[in-house]
Length: 161
Image 1 (cartoon, rainbow, N blue to C red):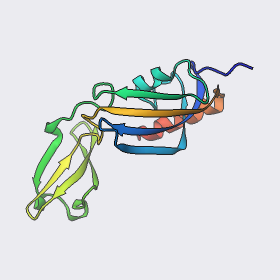
Image 2 (image 1 turned 120 degrees about the horizontal axis):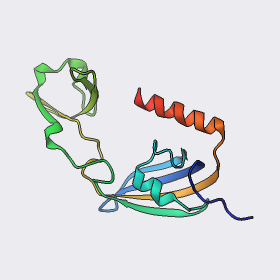
Image 3 (image 1 turned 135 degrees about the horizontal axis):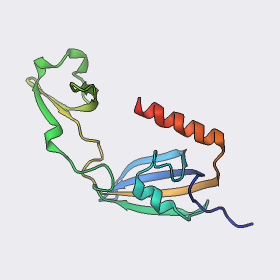
């Protein structure tokens, strides 16, 4: 029997390791990640495209530039604020604070530095500005069921909430 190739609407199970441009390990995901191919909802487009035509058991390496990944680092998203202007419950290193604009759109900022006088908040994605290498292991490929598609849609909606 021929191996099933990854094409649109296939249910794909994978794990991955993520490295920076110095080949230092940033993330290792051993818990399988599921993805319905061609939906464009879960994976970066460059990653999804690299999986086209692959089969279970294959390993894929994908180099991702900042433009194809999480964007460039935007220094205008770094806020230096007086410590006294930030409520005490948010004065914790690595705390994530959601700010809303007048339209109601929210943006997460992470506390990256605290001194006696100031607090620094960074609204960049933690991988912004980085060249990355994904090492992906394809564990399984099969036709997506209606249930798989419904669950993927629910996961997508939850991630946007």
